[in-house]
Image (cartoon, rainbow, N blue to C red; front, side):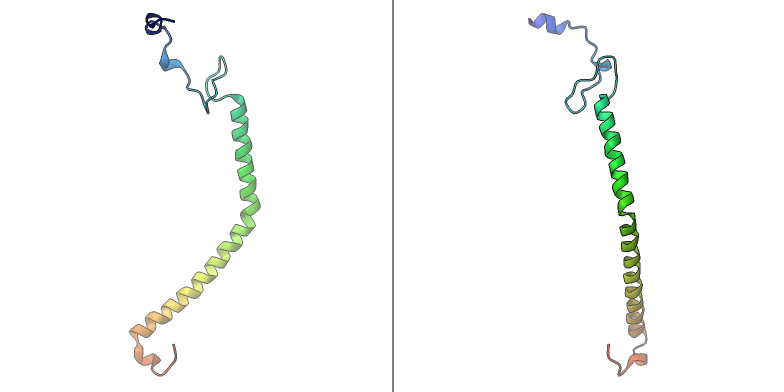
Length: 94
């Protein structure tokens, strides 16, 4: 193919669909190939399944974190009270 043939190629680049993941688009179809669409659906369903499976553990971890935070909040309240009212705590161990 010579240089002149390349310059006069009538292919409109704006209507071409770029290849997805290096695969050429199927003839007469726009968008990703069907195999990739099914793979995306499959991976999405797998991810939802994992999240549902992990839901009880996630809820338990959130409950434990809430308990820890309540204990830390109580200790912080006492610490601030000791700073504000030192006479109230004179002679007591920390």
